Length: 192
Picture 1 (cartoon, rainbow, N blue to C red):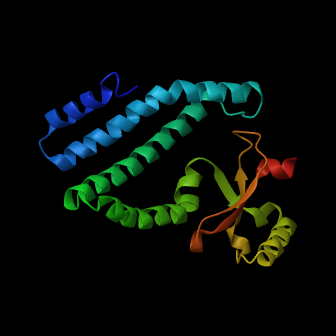
Picture 2 (cartoon, rainbow, N blue to C red):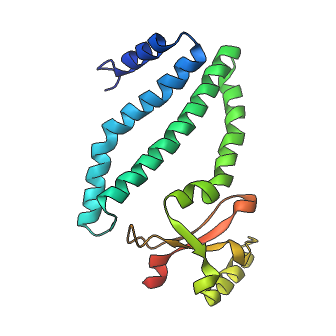
């Protein structure tokens, strides 16, 4: 639809009119296009959240939900801008093998995201506290379980996620890679 109504061409034209520098044009084009697509998709996300509230899967108020949506969009814009600029650079440098070099360049970035997500991104949306503070016996049991599974995750990397302020989700998971690997228990799981 964005192509049909010439949104993409308009954004390209805007970027080209703003600056003659190709790098800066990309830095304008990618986030503006992503933002237009996110705003076009916003009514669907709002309807989904409305249904989640109606069926009591979510308890998050609209203001908090919109703040979380905005943070997610900003993270997405930063990621897409970085990847898009790398893609443009690689295509310019190697028009025949760009796909291979872009794949090589994206591997450390994706690996970095796996490492940083539990430490940097997840705390932007939920509050985490050490599981041992409130549930020392559960922490001991989880440590035994992770060791049997072949994972070495110490007690200080087992966390309780405060999700009950936003949803009624019951979940537990292992996330991260290397030094950021951790076990997360959603507080609703313990409450129910």
